[in-house]
Image (tube, rainbow over all chains, first blue to last red; front, side, top):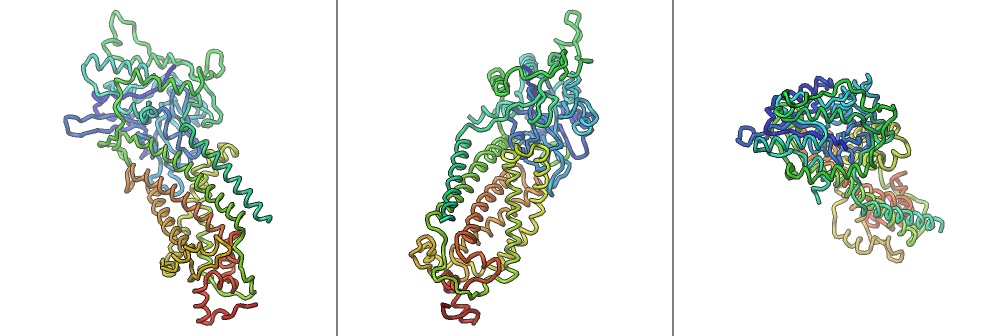
Amino acid sequence: MARMKFLCDAERCIECNACSTVCKNEHQVPWGMLRRRVVTLNDGDPEERSIAISCMHCTDAPCIAVCPVSCIYQTDTGIVLHDKDLCIGCGYCFYACPFGAPQFPKATNFGSRGDMDKCTFCAGGPEADNSEEEYLKYGRNRIAEGKLPLCAEVCSTRALLAGDGAIVADIYKERVVKRGYGSGAWGWSTAYYGPLMGE
Amino acid sequence: MMLRGIAAFVGVVCLALIAWIAVLALGPEHRVLPTNGVIGGQAADDPVQGTGGREALDQRARLMDWRGDTGPSPDAPAPQAGRNEPPLAVLPDGGPRVFEVSPRETYEAWLARVQEDDPLLQDPAFHAGSSTLPGRAMQVFEQPQGRDWRSTRNGLISYGGGFLVFGVTALLAFFLAIRGRVEVKEGFSGRTVQRFNLIERANHWMTAVSFLLLALTGIVILYGTNIIRPWLGPSLFGDLAQGSVWLHMALLVPFTLGISLMFAMWVWQNIITGIDLKWLKKGGGMVNPNVEPPPAPRFNAGQKIIFWLVVIGGFTLIATGIIMMFPFIVFGYDGMQLAQSIHAGAALAMIAVIIGHIYIGTVGMEGAFDAMWSGRVDRNWAHEHHLIWYEKLVRKGKAPPEPAE
């Protein structure tokens, strides 16, 4: 059973921001909105680490639970998608999202912040795959073409991994064994095992 | 008798609703289950299920493996990039694939991998650093409390609000069924005195209409997806919700103006004094029909309590609402989440308070509604419920001194 996940190897990410840039280009994401970004923790310290982060396509996703119009949904492969035709731009998904993924065209909330936009795991939206309509709203649907998200496939250091959770976890574990160090899968406990962590 | 019968019925309905909410609240927390295949359909409503071609995706995922293993080597098989695969949702036989197992089992299988992934997992923690990319709160890597906010909103606030609103309604309904209306004991005299002037009444109704619409649109935002969406369908409900959020914010202007004017006009007459304690001790002469209503100035203790709840609640709602109109400009995640929780909690408490206020101003007490509608109340009503105020009116020559027969 495939369960799509992102894993960023913090020991490999060099903060080149190629993932963020290529995502904006591939999906024609408008100004001021970022589907993927790179966060640098402990900048300047020996502990410094850069990690690329976007929607993690959580299990028991908080954004879906709080959406006042139920416009966000999850596929049987774990990908969290949304319907821009229903979105009212309230911004609650951003309060709930542990990773700051949802993005809005407007910074202030006078009535609406505009239709939410976020990482689709390159899987488009509810419209027909790779239709003009889908492309204009959600960007390219690479999953329907048998391709993984571009941010991961473009990553020059192979820091960012995307695909079935079991496969990317195996790749990462193998790496840690070979090189002898690793700081773990950042964000995975919150994203994929959140319901278990509180108990 | 008719009125009491209706009241008892309303009370029983409210109790049934409370019991239903209790069943929902005590059950396990609602979990998000997968609903769709990747080609979607309108959110969870029109699910087209199934992903074909997972093998192609898995092949590509393996390309990310250690170059030493997957790179070109005479011994290893050349890596395959899953290109030119047919669109995933289209299967060899052309039909949509359904879930391999049920959504619940899919969800549980995802969680079950916690054992295998355990060596990779860190404790959930708040992490913030810096980001060279522009945007608000972009420097925050992880804020696990987003899940807590979700539980508070969907749990404590949603269910608590239901208990509060239906609980207060049930109490009032049973009170009316047992006690009946608070009547003017001396009967109506037919002569009236001015209680609220035109500005006071206009301001009251502007605030009242704003509040009712704010409450209704707020209910659409908090509960709509559970209680209205199933009836209207996703598209129509989307329009309703869009209109609601717009109206909710537009109404900030009349509501703020109304609450501010109320505060300015009535604050001096609403200072709590010793008279109010005596009034409260006797239940205002409203709880027990055999108790004489204690003397009260223009506003009795009950009205003063409403006044202060409306002022404090109103300004709390305005402040938290304005914070939410400018998200993440002053506050971070903690502040925004707290603002939303306070806003929703205070709003539901205000709805309960206003239900009580509407009750006593209409069916609960004979002759009370005229005060805010025509602005004039019956002389006997004023004499009975606001003796100190009435005597002041008599001294000023604005009211007849003797009880009219």
